[in-house]
Image 1 (tube, helix red, strand yellow):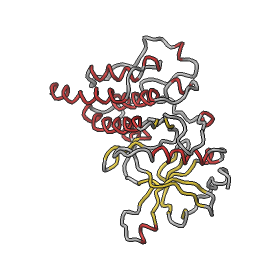
Image 2 (cartoon, helix red, strand yellow):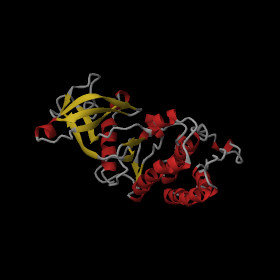
Image 3 (cartoon, one colour):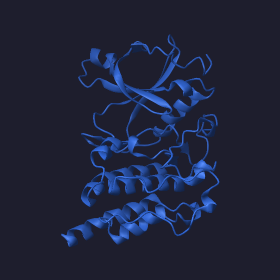
Image 4 (cartoon, helix red, strand yellow):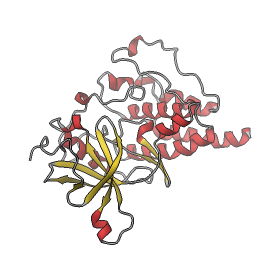
Length: 296
């Protein structure tokens, strides 16, 4: 069966692999579609917690020659991680009857950060920002320590569940060491899936994904949590060298100087000037707790 044949048809079946009954659509992005489903096998075994989430390829990506390999690559990447703030994946499956590949993930009710930001257009207080950002940076630091790059840090890929913050959607992610053992090399450039406003300028210019690019995306997200808006519109490919070096986003009023200096490094448009990693960025934010208590 070819990878193209493993793409679901436009009509999504009600039950996949004779086990997962689709309940409703949860969300759709540029590369995937996620449904809430019930695991019928778990129900038969008496498990009351049978809700799961199924990720299928989006219609356009499903038609790409390496679309299904990209979906499996996401599953294989996240399988390298074990962190309470990373959404867990249970397994990768293929419904042979409907020629459909999908990922089975944990289902956790809760809004994503983009919904929260719609409700808080002026941003969050420092204490609220810390409550969300510290576990998020913990998760991203863990991924980098395991050699996994996310590639698409943005509000829509961070969930506020009842049990805490969850980072998800590693569909654009890559292994820092290169190709994971047993997986084919994949190119994401032809999907054109980098998110403007959060993608590092070098990614838009065709450079490979790096830790530094993840740092830039995290910096944009943190700035948006503080102000309610992105720090800037990402420049067009090739335009980086023409940007005035003195320009930059204004300091959010609630951020203490020690964290603002760290965040400015993360937001540097030139990757050579982005002289900070996730761990020191997190440490600088953690230090704000002492500052906040002093200011009170």
